[in-house]
Image 1 (spheres, helix red, strand yellow):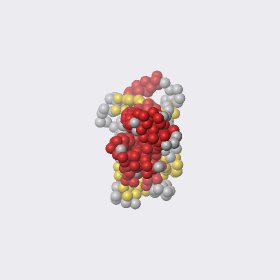
Image 2: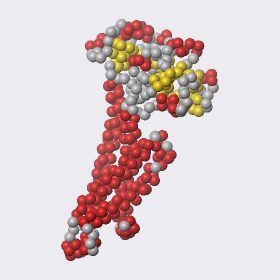
Image 3: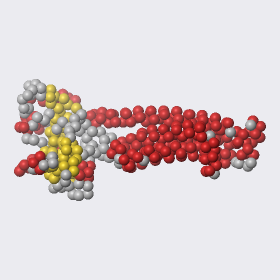
Image 4: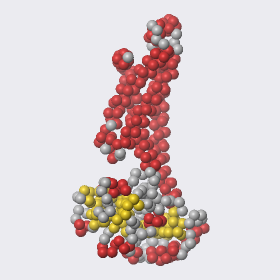
Length: 389
């Protein structure tokens, strides 16, 4: 049967080639979109590790060269009953626009890691959970040590299955460039959006307040804290510094806006892909319908020789599926290069699922488009088909 179908396809190689070309490019587009969808869905399912409800960011813009009195800000925040906890941190706080980066070394291998400076209250305020070790405290900096905590992703990247507690990273290739001792591992930390893959990030202890030029405080407020307190807080903070500008933002809204930057382009990509596939389906349906109409004589002969409606239906659907199979073989040849060459450095499982979904979508589309023309072909009466031919 397969050799017979192949001969029929080869006999109409020009029209078959055009169909293969359409299906080939449709597969590549579906593969790209499905892979992106699988990657983002896998990331979305993982917990972020960050609590955003009733969390605000308090940002100061000093507009002056004088060193801000952040200790006075700390004392004032302690007096608000609405504030459960607060923490100072660097500008790359969750869902902000800032990112840092640097090279760190372990056993001579270079790792690009984003450092974040935090204080002892950061874990409590944001709700982070630890997989191992403990959180930073001021006592850890005694003796010139530089304690750090790693995200689980960074721990697995650098130390793999080893126990990371007590291990040391170098800030440069020479020991005098700075040594960082690992004291803990954070289970999850996705600080850019829910669709973000977990990053290579480590937490460092903040410098003393007297030497700090930090301008960000994260607040954990009691549930039900309203806009009246927000206005009062902004006014009180602005009074501390003569030329200060104060901005308060809600962490849940920042997270929502960050998520929009990912899923809206992804949604647009799915819509564009949907229109492309629809156009291909309509073209495929039209070509199949025309081909079958031109082969009514062949259908009549087959029916006259005893072929049943089921045989005719299976023949035309099988012929179309074989054309799709040839296209998919070439498409899979290009698609499989992505996991083999580690393009975009994504997990191989993402590409595998992208291929599976794209292949399934193509076969579903092909069978769906071929079914109605094939059904009409199977309903042809032998006598009328032979008379028309």
